[in-house]
Image 1 (cartoon, rainbow, N blue to C red):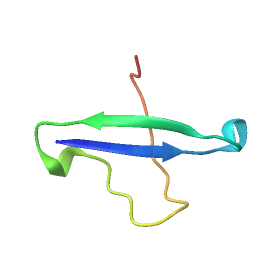
Image 2 (cartoon, one colour):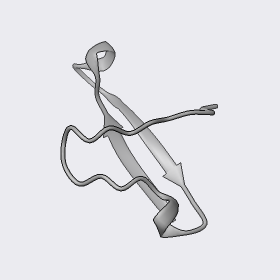
Image 3 (cartoon, one colour):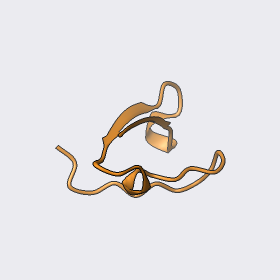
Image 4 (cartoon, rainbow, N blue to C red):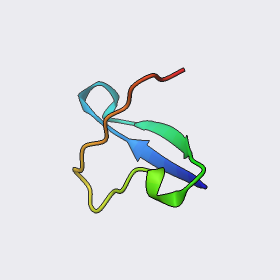
Length: 45
């Protein structure tokens, strides 16, 4: 499964950063309900 999100914060307000998520199961992907949801990223390569 694959999910692509555009993440924006104070350091990247104008263009944001596109992050691609990959998982073996759909339930392991981030669940975003609306703008403003918080996504925590760690162990990023």
